Length: 106
Image 1: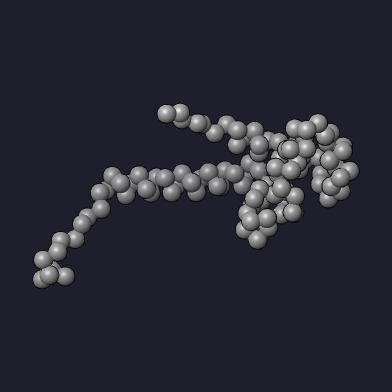
Image 2: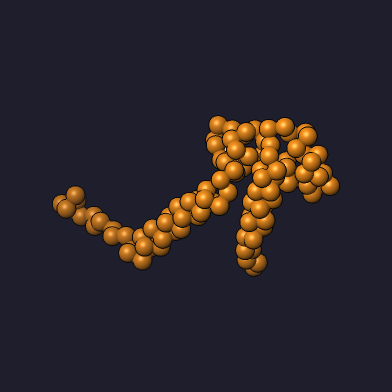
């Protein structure tokens, strides 16, 4: 390569550091998510990786949607006998955590 007249470009070290920090932040966020929400699971083989409750085919969005439309915890537990009250609580906590995302406007 030295004889063909082309020069190798060196990556900007600042850019590489930013990429590494971004990756490290994402890894930390995933770790925090797993520790904070142990009942919320993500599996590409179950509902395409959507947030589910304990690996079951019960999406968090369905449970949160039912609460939003006035269903009580007891009604949801009757409809989904495999669920526990803690599952519903954690689904709500997860939804609240997601809603804390910052939005930067224009």
